[in-house]
Length: 548
Image (cartoon, rainbow, N blue to C red):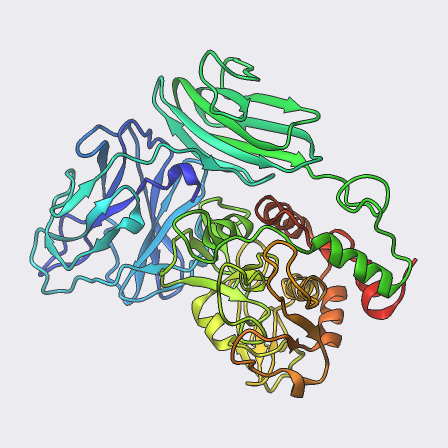
């Protein structure tokens, strides 16, 4: 779900009742003025994950309650299938999945626009004894789907805000963009605007903001340091239609602000902000200026000094915390309103802490050296090692070291999504595996995990933090799993493994563009980079003394 579509969601639906099913409808709620042309609701059969009907939405949303309004679409002669499980997906004008809800269980969509996406069970259901004229509805107070709770069947209110539901004006603060990641399905009514920001690191070049696609007439405004206005901006192409670009060859480091203004109402527009990060080359200029891979010890020491004493992001806080950072670092590349987890390859709607789908995985388990969180425990919140993971898979992994498994191990399959994954039932396939002692990561992410762990080994070498003055752990990689033990608190020395496996995974799963973009994003929060993402060849130098 694109961030700009976060306030559009399914608010009410009805699928089963006593006697012949009747009045089967879906209600979508959105901020007033939202144009739903091109949006649709796709109905899914849960037994095979296949779509069986498409319901088209249209028109602009009126202001009915709290700056929001509703749109209702009837299931028609096809009707809803009656569960165990079945579901419905909300799709925006650009074809991106905003929601995939299910009732009476969960499933993974096998085709259509939600293909590969795992459904979210609403937790309530209707039966053949549900009274005619009832429905499932959200109640609560807020402006986005996660603010509300599904209720047991009660008298329907299609076309009006629900009983017990208080809508508040949508948040007007700017939405943070990720480098190179498109935000899709943007819409606004005449004279209204959408606002965004992009954090640009020092040394970046070729900054550009591009809008395109959709209908209507959107105008692009860009300004450094503060929100642009119609009369104050650094760039404004002001062309007819929605195809506009602002480019800055040598941008200032800091926050760039973007406004997409509706000269006339528009919908289905895509916005992309991107830049080229500072040179990652060793020596010369850029982040790695002066770093020379002359020997294992020299390179390790130089890299440690470079990445040490980074900015610490709080684990959980009312200000910017690791939830905020990871929702950007682990953003679904196909949908900016979702995250893509590391172990299951599952795409989930972005949620806050306490959600029931994903949580924060310490790929280097915090029980192995730094289990007590605090303002001076940098390892606990290090974003290069923290990754979002499906809750159940994270629990199954626990604090097991990484290693290679065998066909006799238990399989933890991945979802087929984004042209990758899909558990095969055959070892190793596209699955994670565990024998209860070690955990083998699936093929497409094993290199990412390995490089995150190798970073921790170089970043944390004991001594005192240069900012806080507090002692830091000496984190060490080993093949001797007898050394990998729960430290029962913050330790001076702690071990993780297996080193040989991690080195192999690094070779088997090379760095890709998504991993580089993650490195870029983390740098905007922590101020440091994972050198093994930028220079994969340095792994051989540091760990095998193969240097050049």
